[in-house]
Figure 1 (tube, rainbow, N blue to C red):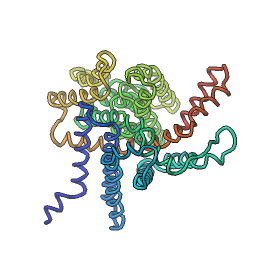
Figure 2 (figure 1 turned 180 degrees about the vertical axis):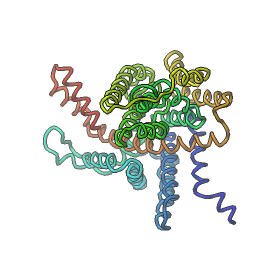
Figure 3 (figure 1 turned 60 degrees about the horizontal axis):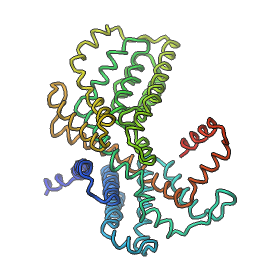
Figure 4 (figure 1 turned 180 degrees about the horizontal axis):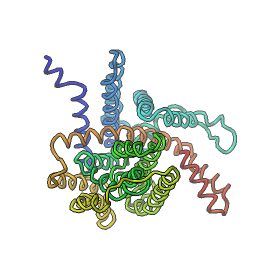
Length: 447
């Protein structure tokens, strides 16, 4: 009985779900044979299950655990309801049944709760404000008001169409982001990522404020393959932040440098963050087009950050390490092939025009091959499981963000708010392109 209880522990169930999620996304990445709405439902279900399983493990009271188990059961109901009743939903299009509305309302509550648990209150509050805007729009005077929509119409838009929860943001997460997070996890867990940190340390550790510059360069290299600011900060920051503090940087400055450098990985090709994939989907252009456009802004960002660190080091009189640069770099030259996953992504995306999904899978396979060949890297069954777990942890935040973004986009499409904002920006900006771009920038930052 004890062995059985241990076998079916929450931890083991979590591992099984994480591995199953990775296998599912690799399969669908190779063979896109599933209905997009079904695919996104299953993708969201993985995210919800992983979230609540983690919560159960942390709970100390039985009432809290029961609540999380009930949430998992509701998650299965909400996500599979779409799949099981797809034909019926299609036949009664525009006239949702009571059961449709119940499951639709539950889906919105689960997604808001998911966002509250993973990324705080900001995005859930924004999603709720937009939902209220859809319902109470008739009470808003002037240009931004609208006729108002019933709760039935709002739930129908959010849950039963492809323009709400199951819209482009969650679709991008299901098709592309999870696979690239998995690729970044394989880079870290096999030990290949450590080479990027070692290379940056060897090249820049000797200059003024060396550890901070190592953080900038290493975060740029790691960010190019991780696609996650959090994973980037965890992998690189664990090495560079203690070094910066040891060299004389204040703790706040060390944390700020690493946070800024890790965040820049969101715009560092070839992978970048979730926003790049959503952008490509909305613009209906190949991901490689967005990737090429991001190269110069990304380089400018990191060059500016590099010199900011340099000037701060000069100001407070911090020197680098005394290790000879050539002696530090020389042992690493024979392992430069560990950079091949980054170059492979560029070549496959830009030259061969592979899809982002297949490119990510090819990168994972290449990481495994390199880890098997390289004596200092590691690839075992445990490595693969650890990579799946790491990707699953990072994916939960992305899934919740994209699902709530779907709520916001759904309201924008339903109420015509997007067209109103566009008209307003053009009216205010007139013929001044710089002013229009500036207002678009501010709008994007708010959104």
